[in-house]
Image (cartoon, rainbow, N blue to C red; front, side):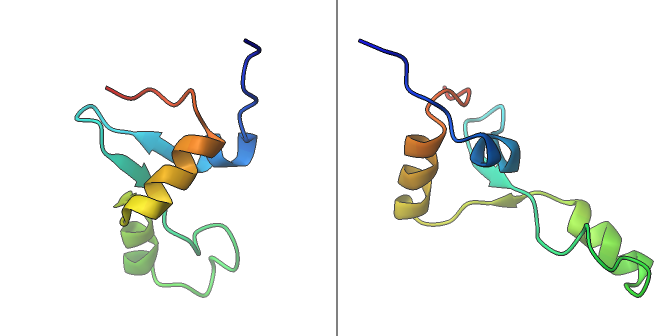
Amino acid sequence: MPKIKTHKSTAKRFRVTGKGKLVRTKIGKSHLRRKKASRVLRQLDKMQDVKGSANKKRVAKLAPYLKRK
């Protein structure tokens, strides 16, 4: 059975926590930062849970080798 190719941009955007939850980065951090308040940029630093079983299933299919427990 051949290896499955990982969708590289999906692997960069998502990660799995120690408890096995799938988390993602928030959008809006990398572009036009100067006009955003520092409070907003701090809030964008935090990771956010992936909601919905369909979204989790899609990520699992695109990045099959993400470390899960």
